[in-house]
Length: 326
Image (cartoon, rainbow, N blue to C red):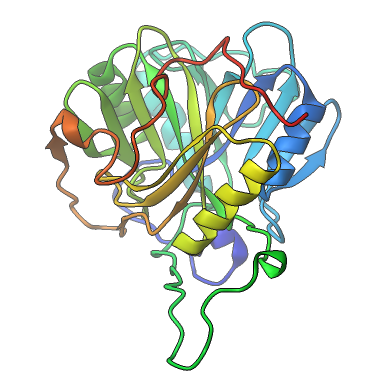
């Protein structure tokens, strides 16, 4: 449930300064038509706009991502945009000024209404006034169980298309996990949920959010690894994986369950070598809860259970591509 659907009032911790949502992200991709085919098959509402594509979920007004066609590194992260409450924007500006954070010119094609700066790895960051798009309560998950005397599964030809409900989180590569954690805590007010010793870290929003709206994986260079999209059941994850494989996007990893966040997952490799994730039943951290982060061993970095991931799953994929549909 998100504020922009209007079902639940936005949750807020009034005594804490922090962004409330990862509003959207922007990638540079080599071929917008290829991107349109991929994300449409994934189940998103892909809308064309002035040399770009915007990713929506079906029936949802919110723009979760923008894809722009550009030369250079394929699937390169252009920026991350975070949402804040209107009366907090001035407080964020004062914080950035007090800490000596240099402002940057907004990227081409953006409104320029927010606060623009760079993170500790050089990625462009925006804090903007926006409706709260992170959940205000834990989303429901269907079990798929039916009473005795009824069939629980539909024939394949009648199986519905999977339509994600919202974006859950983004994972990016970071040169120095401790430095990145500290930066996003200090500048944006995010809080650490869990970490996996030297390999990964997971951050949530103080105003109520999923276990993580942003995550980091250690690497020798910054970059984009995946975006995760919430669906309503484990069955939907399986249906989505089957549809993507049947559409030619057959390289993936799942079904499995993570330890940090506890969500069930299946990943599909996108046309430029990074990943998109079907996800359900992720842990939720309510507003006001003093969540105690855990430090997990490396054996918990990827999953509680599931198949072995592809050997290059955690490789920084800035120049790798997979074969798409013929």
